[in-house]
Length: 278
Image 1: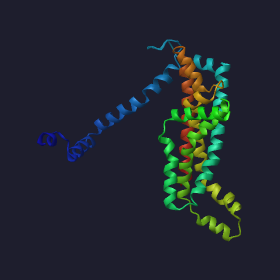
Image 2: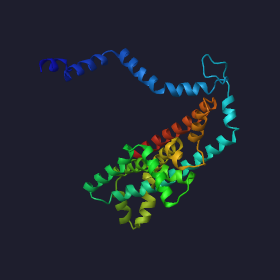
Image 3: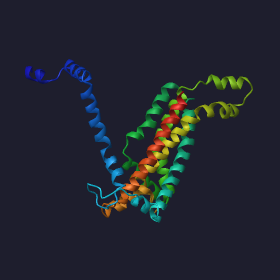
Image 4: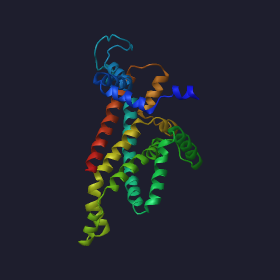
């Protein structure tokens, strides 16, 4: 009993260790730097090799070139997959934007006790692996006679992105001042006119931000598309097919384009959501 107690670190010891780390800014900065490098090293390597003129993935570089970007932007297979990915992103954003806004407005009419339960259920799919959703969708589509296609994948993308949109829009509406709607109705505005002229303009930045986030999720998705898209290949599926044949240098260029696109959408989503909260 005594040995176990002596070997266990005390809470005071952890606090003293953290206090020492704070007093050493160089060590703290070094630790943060190591974590950041660990997180972003694969992406940095991918972007760097996308500009390597040689097909060999080795250092040092033979030279810098846009050769692989020229290849993917003249490859009809890649361009078709890119258009399908953009189409899926637009459809997913549209579906989740409408359903997320309607759901967030509807939940405000429910009692607070039941509201917490519904929010917990809505967030539960975020903890479920996407593989399970993909397999379940593939089985369900087969049972009800839906063929695998890009439109079937769109519905799957909307399914996995909807909880994000619902929670983001719901959080924005939690801080919404509904006295503005009451004031508009007191001045003679109908419910629809008050929603169109008061509610929607104020929550629209958060809705657009959530839709951009849904678009980024759709573009980046592989698992849902793998099980439901069939022959309609999206960019992640094209990359997977090329990986099976070996390390293709064009993968770095495709990955870099996807990285720029998805991070741009995520950044714009964060900006829109922040504006909506002001």
